[in-house]
Image 1 (cartoon, rainbow, N blue to C red):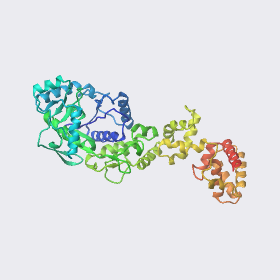
Image 2 (image 1 turned 180 degrees about the vertical axis):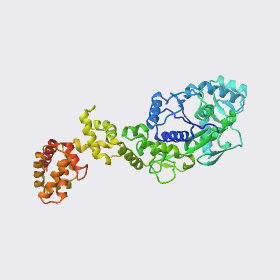
Image 3 (image 1 turned 90 degrees about the vertical axis):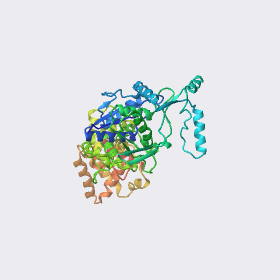
Image 4 (image 1 turned 45 degrees about the horizontal axis):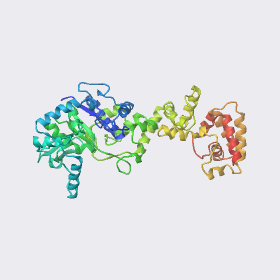
Length: 485
């Protein structure tokens, strides 16, 4: 069997979409499982929108996800170059072959003429397609049209009355009629090849054996197949993976939240969690497991378990997965990811000293069970930084006005002030002693102290909170809060 070769070929025209990352991952997992090659090719023939900045963003995102490539931009390989704008000579060579063999022809129709034809077809209820006006132009007609200053495109001559059938690795047998395709442009008037043409030449010349891509490309496949056949190239195996929908089952967009890999990275998601989540978007492993290491994904991934139905991007599930990976990573990792968000909130000034870092990691350890991604740390750590207590509700403030509470606060302040040093055991002893000596239920001691220090009835472990705030800050907060009620 020939070596399996797959590729990921993004257009560098903007932020790297999470859907593109899913396509790259599926190709990468297949290559790694089968011992094949994963190629990164850049499709940058959209000259107006493509940029090297976007290309770098894509490469950095792939590296962050741990998706490496065996051939392609930056690493080279035997079938380069791996940017389409560096392959224009190759495209011209094969265009000349298609023209010479009669598989393609020059089209001089203007944009206005094509649009008029399209509108006329729509008015009749017909599917728009090129009517073939330039299909049989003679030399004299071509000279006349060129003399008018018209710059021709190159159109592919689609065989008439042909059934275009292929076996999709995800969807099974798929069939198109060539009559519904119509002759299509393969080279624009500026000499730049269009996607459906360049992708065939690139895949064929790079010996790509499997084309695994998003479902939206399914309708492009018949155009590509007729080009493969005209040039005598062997067809790769095609597999079209499902669309990604939001939880409302509409196509995923910005209104569903973050859509780019960079956004998730900045929010403090871990690459292992993103990879685990993306793998489950359309792929169903055997069994009930949902948490997989990279090695487990490689060993278990297969296209025959990729679903035809759309995959739903459930951000709650992503957050659940990421919370698992964050807890496993520990407070030091969470702290590092949270630093930009804590600095933006004004809670810390970077860089931190060693003592500041150690204290912050302890605070993060107290709240990490409540954090799904690192950006949330600023919200959950606010009680460690805000000494001006704001009550979350009138009910919370009312608890401090209960007749039993002043003795509790007086005892707490006195006993805390008397401690030579704060640690968990000492603070715990103070609180338990107040419960015992004043003969009150725990909720009459712990709850009021928490509310006086944070303004909230619930929150991080009270004993750890008191220890990490320190005696001076705790006493100052108590005094300020109790004066305000």
